[in-house]
Length: 162
Image (cartoon, rainbow, N blue to C red; front, side, top):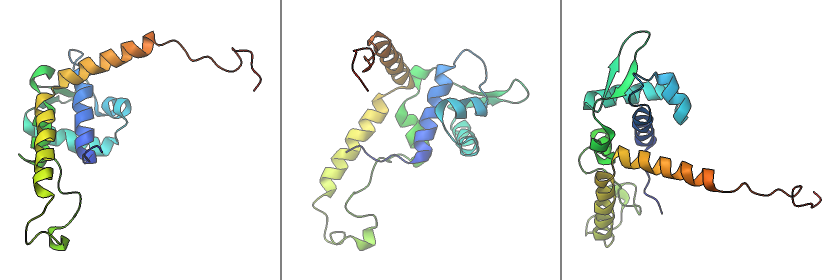
């Protein structure tokens, strides 16, 4: 089971990732980020303005304007982005109850809470140990693997009837 990450966080990570991919090319327009990462442009604009307040990205106005990273990608962690968007301890809540008032164990303590705390700590550790550069390196590695993989043989090339 993969922890649920809010859409805004997923979009923010993908936007920062795209800016890191384009680092050194000058400011990147919202429309280019939105197209490359399949993010709704209006929502992306809100997210980028929030990230700008974090100091992780900057913007330049004008015809040649856009957004760019304010720091090298190896100094920005996924945890930096998540903490800015959700606060210092954001990861995941108890999956058993969506509301503490409806939780049968809330008043007397929950048998699951210690486990969920460990899960949260593990998730936060991964966030804090993963830089945007790590994600870029992984992307390069995955693309290289795909290029080395031989094309799949189709039924026609193997002489079979369809």
